[in-house]
Amino acid sequence: MSSTTDAAAPLGERTRVGRASRSAGARLRISFWFAVPALVFFAAIVVYPTVQGVYYAFTDWSGLGSEINFVGIQNFVSLFSSPDTSGALWHTLLMAGSITIAQNAIGLLLAMGLSSRIRSRNVLRTLLFAPVVMTPIIVGYVWQFIFVPGGAFAQFTALLGAKDGGLNVLGETSTAIWGIIAIVVWQYAGYSMVIYLAGMQNIPEEVTEAAALDGAGSVKRFAFVTWPLLRTPTVINITLSLITSFKLFDQVIATTQGGPGNSTQTLSTLLYNEAFLYNRYGYGIALGLIVFILIAVISFGQMRVFRERG
Image (cartoon, rainbow, N blue to C red; front, side, top):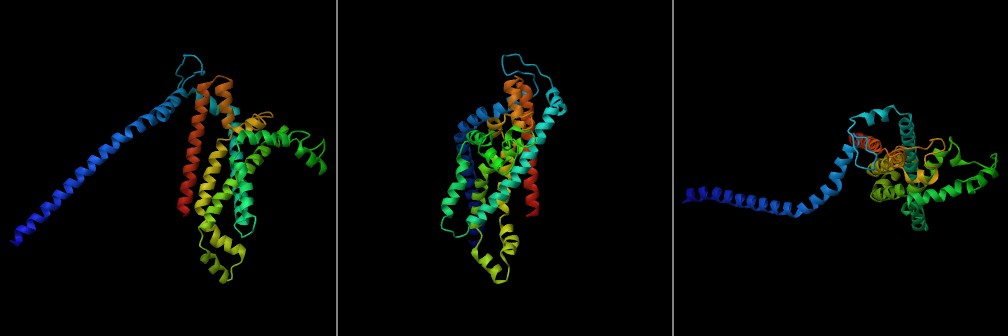
């Protein structure tokens, strides 16, 4: 009697497992059919235009008409041999590096200052975050009026002794790119501040209090306690800053349109000019593909470095 029960138990268990497996398979098939409309929509809106864009990068299509000729890698050869591309790439890298460093440094300082228990911290947080919600092109136009000859900044620098009625920041080839960098940092420093503030709020007060009891000053507490625990907000901020900087377009168009003398031409503005002003759509798409690969490589490399160090 005992041996019969022992033999039946595994069989029952296998039966239950088989039924559960068939039930899970049925639920999976039902879920798949519910997802089909979303997958079709995603393929039509995202996948198909992306594949089509990659194809256009290997053609001489002007963006108008139906005449499309396959030219192989000719667009990429022309791009890598063009001084306009190398200049735009240098300006983009300079902006990306400067904006990322300045925006994160200022955002971190603001977060440290506003994490203290001052009465007006909520009002200051709101004011410093306000530029983030403004349209980038509107911000560019506003700062163009500030930097214009005879504007507020020119008058201020004239009071400090600058010659010729003050500095014309956006009108000089040596200063125009730094003017745009200042505009972007002014707009997005509050964004970095909010992310750092969120990270600081997750740091237990007991940890910093224990460090203080051990005699660590404010500098040591930040260097050895606070800063290591802000690794995740730092990775997020750097990644977002780099992506935003590589796509920088609105502020440049609103202030300098790539000038003076191509001194502020970026990869995004060059892409726009080639594709829509000079009717070299295939050439512009090839440039866009290079920008996409560049952003993907830098973002992946940065995430890998931070992961290994963590």
